[in-house]
Image: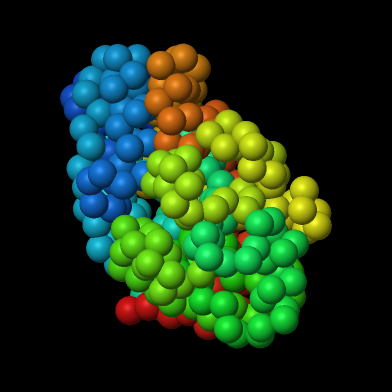
Length: 324
């Protein structure tokens, strides 16, 4: 190699670390798309919209929500993975899409560890164990005793095979050493309707739809699946308090960008997200959904994705659940 060519190559290489900084110096200069891989109105959509507006104010550009549902959230998540890594296409990541779908769907089309640049967690949300009022169980230990006395006789509903609700119940049954029969539904609405009607006996529900049903005495709450009590149901003890120490089944929600997005852009987005989560109004909005705001660094969120995928993929395999 000639000396002139070597100097030219060396000069080019010296600019590589600066390219990301240069690229991000004017970022953002046009609207950002935040893909929610589910239909409008659900818990994922609500949390995305809770942080989108305050993040827009911090960034100086609109953060536009686009809903791209399908295949348990994997369609929209795959779209994010394949987008240009320029900070203008982001995705709402969660337990379902990043920890469950890659094992549940043989052709999910993305790797949760390799195909995304994590920005930060938004919140975590426990489940609440609901039973029909006719079931003779008033706490978790009574539910376990009843299930052990009648192996396979108690039916539990889920919002779909492979959902966080389904696998949270699988984790409970495995930890408690009981045999429960799974009845999958197409969403929480019909599952709760049949629980009210006594067609199924148990449902591990997300918190928002449970509030009115429990307060009005239509369903009985036995425990929450977080490691600490929920502010929404402070009177309901955790499963861990009731004889299964360390038990935890919570859903995680965060924001990711395509892999290769420059770190200065990731840091700018993380700062905007953390500022949003520090806003008392946003904090209150998230709390009303039964979730707990949990700001993190990008690296902390990357570690969280790794832990969650390891945990939930084992449960998917154990449950035998598959989807196409």
